[in-house]
Image (tube, rainbow, N blue to C red):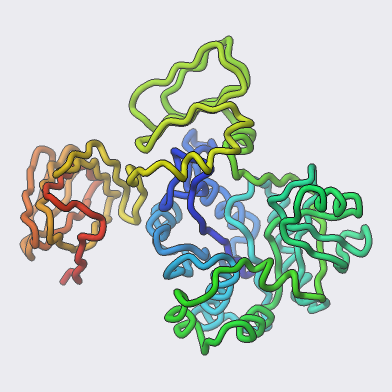
Length: 437
């Protein structure tokens, strides 16, 4: 089974835990059997592997999120990288071209496209497999998964099937109608479009060639920034006449807001939090190293991270986006392929960061033109390479690097260090990478 997981977009609705780099699918709030926590991405990836260990899973994502994916799934996760964001039609086309031209998947093989962030149980992935098998039959160009609607939402597309059978042809598909029209569709037996569909690779490639002038994956990648931003539903599904829909009867939740996300949490708090016994329906997610105490409140979500603190009525939390759009805040925490970093302090000409490197990992070999850096090792053991000279480092060691100096650090064990950046112009763009010989 070939599966493409769509993992794009920025994280405004789950602020302050999410941002342009760390979207909602990377937030670790779901309890695991060993007592730890996993993210939506890790949960869905694990569920797919359990349902079909041989499945070929490719994650379509933006360049900014690749490091977080590598951090959470490992270096062997297959990734189709968008050079920039261009919505789901270009992203799906690029991923399918990647499957065909890079991974050698033939045009006649089916592929299932899924969002990375639904909250579902294992039966969902059995339905995903069935969707792929139905697409392989070639009875329709597209096979959609239909979800029974619970209210007339303007967030979803609507599928009106020709009959009530488990797999039916589709008479009408309409992407995100207004609430009144949505209610009319529901009265006609419409289903929500859950963003899951299957087809043969050939269908997407042929359709893309009709709408985009490109030769192959490499050519499409080079032209990607010039493509129009448009969703797959608007560009393809609304214009396709030969569609089937397969009804899905199991659990499915779109965890797009704090209100819906807390409904899926198995416990009322994550992190250092005390919820008083007079509280009702209160959830706290705390990533700070200070405690949060709540008393005598109800129907509330409290979320704290280095980027801000949210205190909101649960229903009102759905309307967070315009307020967050007005907040200007640099990224204070991010997961990278080698580990993670957390900004501790920002001044006019300095920034202090706590860096954690996983065992066996290293940063890129790089330099900065406009700033000096100082590393102080606080735990673990590793090696630094500064202008080609390698030396071992351990707790208490201090390494100073002037602007222009090439440097990296390699973790032999889990390695934590404090990085102080000093300069009049401190910017994420001030970085030049080099091969490490």
